[in-house]
Structures are given as C-alpha cells and as structure tokens.
Image (cartoon, rainbow, N blue to C red; front, top):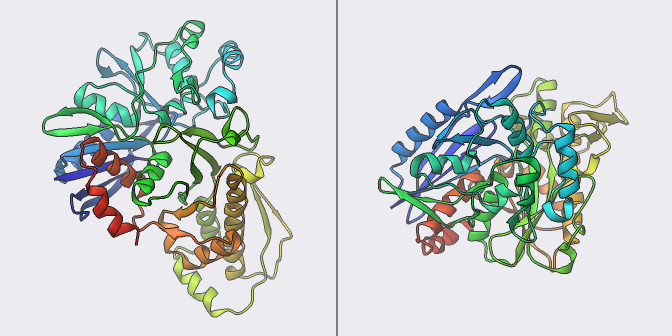
Length: 434
C-alpha cells in the first residue's frame, strides 16, 4: 500500500510517498503555478490541479492528504471553483472599513487565538463577494479544495479554520453570528486532522491542514513526547509548542503584540502555541546573494578553517517575532564593521538566527509544563555550523528530523491515520526517531 502527502507551498508543491514499511517510493518538487491579474498574485488553479493529478498518478497512492498555506481560499459555485485563489499575502484583497469595524466588534484574540492582520481568509472572502457577479456557495482552503474536487467532500480542519478569522479556537466552533452581520456564506464543517474524509476511484482521502501545523502533526506521530517544540526552519520559520491545556493558555494569556497565537492541537486537550520568524532562510539567502555566494557549504568550509571572527553587524529584521517595531521586510543594521570579511558576515547571520530561535524558545517555555523535546526540520538541519550555534544559544539538544520535507510528511501521516493504518507509525518511528 502506498501513502502520499502533498504540500502546496507558496514557492513549491511537493509530494512524498511511502509504502507501509516506511520506504520512500516517490519524492518530488515542482514550482507552484502562479499568475498575476490586475497587479494581484493568484495561484493558477488549473495548472496546480494538473500538477497534482500528475503527482498522484505517478505515486500510485492508495491514500492521500494535502497541506497548504493558510489564508488563501477557493470560491466554489455549483460544485466547481469559479476563480483562482488569491495569494495569502495580498493586501489588495481586503475588507472595507465598515466590514472591518464589524469584525472588530465581534471577534478578538481571546476567541480567534490569532491577531487579525488584514490577511486572514475572511478578508479575502468579503473581497470576493464584492468582486464576483455571482456569490459563491462556499469557500475552501486550497488543501481541502483538492479533496473536494476529487470526492465532493467539503470540510475545514482546525488549523485552516484558525486562519479564517471566523473560528473560536477555545469553543472549537465557527463564530456563526458573523454570517448575518457580514452577509457571508456559512463555513464547511470542521474535521480533525488525520481523520477519514472520503473515498473515490480506489483512493482514500484524509483530512490535512495548514503546512506548518501538518509538519508538527507528522513530528508528533514519530516522537512519543507529551510536549514537543517544532522549529520548521524554512524560508520562514514557525516555532510551535504542542502541549496539554493548562491555565497559561486561557483567554489572552498567549497574546503577544509581536505576533504568533494559539491553535487547536491533535487530541482533545492539546493546544499549539506558535511564534513566527518570517525572515529566516530568506535572510541568509539575501546576504549570500549580496556577497555573490551560491554555495553556503563552501563558505562554511572557510569558516571552519578560521580561529577567530569579528561579527560584521547587529541586526533587527521586520517581520520577525522579536522585532515587531520594524516594518515588515525592512532590516536595521547597526554596529557595522567595515573590516569584516564574507565569513564574518555569514557568521553574523548565523548568530542572529540562533539568537532569535533562543528568544522564541524562551517565550514558549512560559506555556510549557516541562522541558519539551526540541525538533527541527528543513534543509537547514544539514548546516552543522548553524545547528551547533543554535544548540549553544538554546542550551538544549536539538533533534534534527531526518526527512526535510516535513509538511509533506505531515500530510502523509494524515493519510496513514485517515486510512486506518496506524500500525505503520511503529515502523516509521523506528526509522526516524533513532
């Protein structure tokens, strides 16, 4: 039997397929199709659907689940998508001042578990409703639309619901008073991540969810710990704590003006507190391009041959949890050392990234009940200089996850669970947890 997880990302769409023994039978990545219309960026749904169909055919999967970015939704009318989903970060698709006033009156962090930032799905839904000649019947996140177009099953999961701006994370229900107040369509029913969804053409479809949360779901299936911190370490990094409900999680206790939030976990009493470093791998990539470097491991070899370093500068980066006072996308450089060389510059970035991870880790420990297992994923786990530096800053062992495509792996785990093959996790744990 073959299980597949497909992760629909902003940059790439990836598939990971395994058999019941944990052998990888397919791993592939292709650029996510996009197009620009009237200055706004959209997912190209037709090309994306074709790409996913090709992946599924090649994998010969018997069970599949999907993960995707949050906030982007597909408008559905008469059983079909009627417009491409706008990209999650497009501020041109937003609520009016009147609509936002209604949102502010009827939602808050203490219900949503997330800070409204003008990008949540409800803003795009209100914008679609104004733009389209016919109102859609309902909207679905991209990952769940893929199941809908295959089987007709329409649903949300808690992780994508949390990105809607209309979901109460504590009552685990839609804020349905918004339907009348904003004249919007009801949201689809909510199903747990990893549960069975539907079956069609000899394929079982399971419930996936938001890419970062699916990554944590996959990690939680491999490591048998009550509390886990998962550091995604991608282009951006989300650092998430999976824990049992306790008094520190109530109401506004997890609120921080710098960002992050709280979402439902995978079992009844579980919650996930998360903080974001939106400029993580992308920051390193930017400075590599600045010095004309396209091979970080070549620089690392030079760094290892040096005995002393003079840091090139100090940084504050907008968009990161610890620098909320800096506008998104801007970087403040201070204490610039004009005598620094390329090794000093890259080491300065490593120190910055390691320190930011440490500050977020300390923040999350305030919501933990013990000392959680710290698991890191992504390609950065192969960067031994960065990983050793992070461990020194954290004063905590970092467990590298052996599969770099962690969101796709999380979706694959959802497919395993949703198809009733939970025993497969025993073999996977033996392969990946040791």
